[in-house]
Image (tube, rainbow, N blue to C red):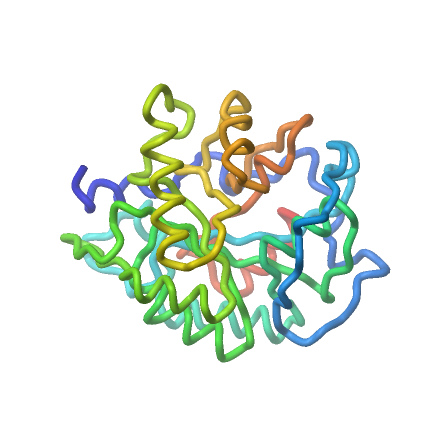
Length: 287
């Protein structure tokens, strides 16, 4: 599959801006969370006891943003392309807004410990996630996040590592390792962005096993988190993720599964059409 076609498909979900009926009060308003420096401290999840679904669903949700390309718009970008492409200055302004508003980034390990055992989070926690291995995430995003002491989770599509596409270039293995070494989380986003709901037979090996092995070879770390292409999931695939050691899987704004919410953690797309103020309003409204 051509890289341009893979990226053109994006991680789209028609429900990405919907506010679900299950949405709780923001975790930022919960008493008992602990303020901390604006860093995502490492946390040991090996001995975390997985909670029942009701306990997890009853915890206030942490805002989680999903980004793709961070570059200036082109004349050829349509409305959908602009929705999934945040312009460089707008992205920088969004991160400044988050910092000025008192948000502290957390990583998947911290979210996992919070959802299962109620472990304390920093004041006004937020998670930043970046899909599809796009080079902008290394050249533009990473330096911007460092300015504020922010960390993020990068979900890698392994087919594109080190490639140059017609419309977009991708991170190299060395750049991915650098992000991991700097304390960011590297997660899996499949081999080539095939719809998770259609996996059968050898798809599990091609889309999960081989990418996991490659990312572990690159980073030297265990890969335990997964993001669904297009944000689309089905519960029939949850056992396949679990037996491969994935602790959580990230979707988009769909309602979480009532029996296994760790396998469909909600995110929202940070739209390229949103100003920092609009982004803030959507964070508050959606979580």
